Image 1: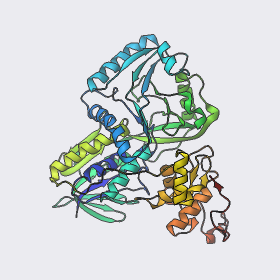
Image 2: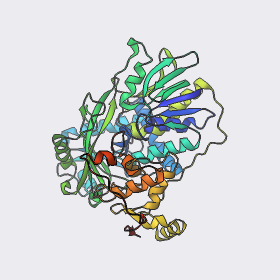
Image 3: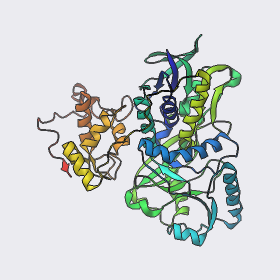
Image 4: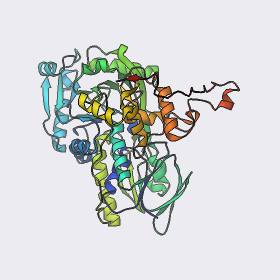
Length: 500
């Protein structure tokens, strides 16, 4: 029997798993998708919010400020990309500057440090490409940017090293109360645990409602946000994260650099019913371009390399739904994790782990390993570091992804690590192969080949992400009208590749 069962391997679930692994507990994480970071955590703005927007006294306010304070040290401990670039909330009408002052006062109540209001001249010295209609802005120097999948994968890997087991493509179908806790019935068998953590993202209401009476039910609405990602050529158009004065639908369309050097525009905000509804629309992306043009003078439309959409888990309370569930002892919600959920992840892990520790009274784990080293990047490495890596493993000299200069050595490391990649999306999120200008047009066949060889399966069994997302048809199906899988020559798969 498990001590703790965590449902959902997004940023919140993995943060809870990592914090709980500090204790002597038997912990498992169930994830319905093929990898960690497949839901809300993979498709968001990658922002570490300073914490001035949330209602003072709310969980959002408390966990946002605490998460922001923890993130830098956590990035150093777990080796994922993070940069404190500061943020600006832009005002476009002089009459609205009073709202900037209200935000500043709210931030001060929340404990955010360094907040101040800037006039246009000072703004221009910080952001020369600022929009013509911008009159003033609220400056938050503690605002930052992070790699959302880098954070989530780092938390998950560290949790796994510390004994947490992860079960992918495992979907919870029913939860039953038992004498000693709970039994989760899944498509891959049942799991019994003394305590359950519900971190299921947009599905958190369904998990919650399995164990609660009709009077305690919750409802999560998926809020879709569409984004545009620009090439690194446009990455220097904004140094800070540029917000617009928030509305009831959120913080509006932002313009921000990413930790990898791109420029990100978005998101829109549309409440939908489909919990898998991540399609983009011409209208939505047009609105992103239109709104972004208010923040910067020249929106780099010609530099857009991809678009995507993500879903935020919108609850009905206006705040996160975190904590013990009435009438269900040992069941803990981590629900309604909309923005600033990613910013709060380290603090959510702390908070929920403390609640569960109070419930189970576990001993400390004397063997807890607090540090994790990420995969070295040849694109960012110094000449000396590149030479060292190549001398240790010649695969680091074979370039697979030209746009991002990702080598075979990095891809092999992504597959062989704890919770290693088994899909092309898994490779992409760990080492960025396919993230560049051509969006995997060049490197996909080579990544397929490496994955198949490492996993000991045919290339027609490699998937992009979820069940059924195959690139190639089996040979017998291909002969009946599909794309025939070509037989590879016997030559080494290293032949014909670029070298550093």
